[in-house]
Amino acid sequence: MIKVNLIAETRGAEVRREWVSREQRPAALGLALLLVTGVGVTGWWWYLRQERAAVEASIVTAESELVRLREAAVLVERASQRKAELSERLSLIERLRTAKRGPVDLIETVSVSIPEGLWLLEVKQTGANVQVDGRAMSLTAVTDFAARLQTSGLFKHPIEIVTTVAETFEQVEVVRFVMRAEAVGSIAPIADAAGAAVRPGA
Picture 1: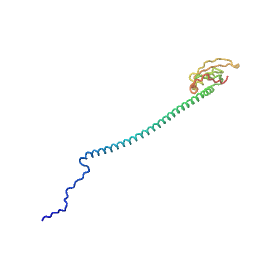
Picture 2: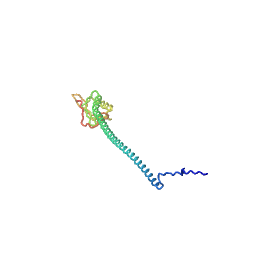
Picture 3: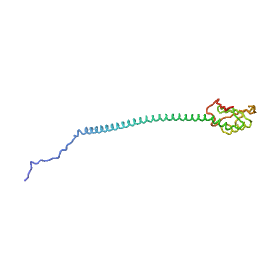
Picture 4: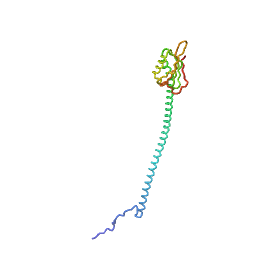
């Protein structure tokens, strides 16, 4: 005897559900590519924007640093000019001190070189030329005086005895003399002191 169950359901193969139909797949793929491209372009634009902001910030920093360096350069230039001015002033002061010391050294040198029996009438310096006028009791005193001046190191060699003339001074026979020499060292003037004269007395 054959039994047939007419109530039981016969299950066939399950139908697979598709999200996108075959006809719509190319359009969906294109849409997906468009979305990916949009996201990529948006990300690239954001990256470029960040880079631009960083570059602009660097430019601002560099410009402010450039301004600071320019100001520092101006200060350095002013300091250099000030230093040059101060150096020139110090040099001028030193030259003036030397110039003021020159006549003192000249008089001191002449004074310590005077032998006994000789006295001076005038010591005159015109530029580097020094002229000494005086009287002496003898020609030996005159030559001794010239030799002492020569060994002082403040005059070029030789010291010239220009004239020696015998004359009577207060009823005494004396020798009137004139000497010339060229100054060197501390008594050589920086600028021409034309007409400067020292008169120790007659």
